[in-house]
Length: 63
Image (cartoon, rainbow, N blue to C red; front, side, top):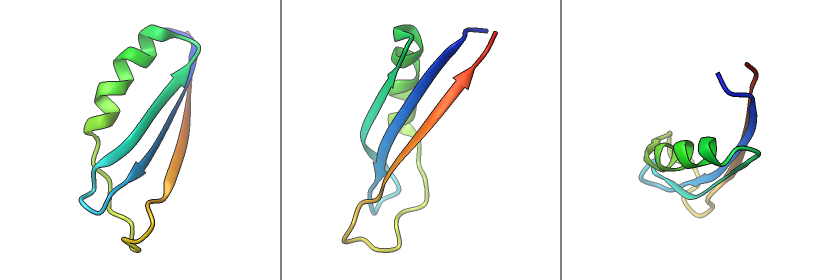
């Protein structure tokens, strides 16, 4: 297992698709792995379609 801290930021559109996905962290290999995966995630759409809420989640892994 790899030690890293990675932050994934995104918004969810009305079709449950993540948009404006931004991945940052201290390990480029982890960023390169998560970026295409996160772009394919689907989450429940926002209740108010006029606003795209932005979320940010930080993952910390330790060996």
